[in-house]
Image 1 (tube, rainbow, N blue to C red):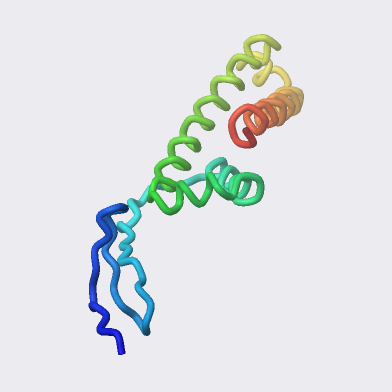
Image 2 (image 1 turned 60 degrees about the vertical axis):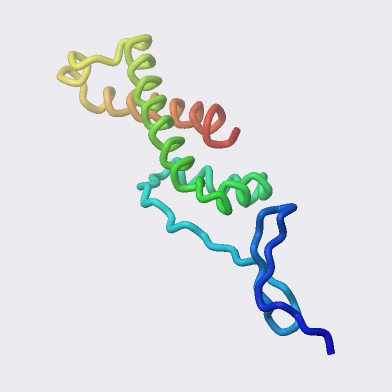
Length: 128
């Protein structure tokens, strides 16, 4: 019978291993994930990464960077969406004066602007 050590260290990769049922398993610890609020855009991008880029998703997940990455992307997307909506409003003349004069027309135009702006951020940030 071979006498196996309970714990070994591999200097080539810097990992410690523990003997479990005749197999050495790496002693891996995962840092507690930092709490990052992830909104709509972050959740959509997370699903996109899982489905379309699973290797990148796993890299971010295993390194503990996924939450921060998604929170940053979510914030960036919200800011870009707000900027795009403001620019479209100005370009199309959708103002507070229009809102006061014809509320239904203002709502129709704002919904149209918001839908187009969301489509832009979907393609430019979330699904890229």
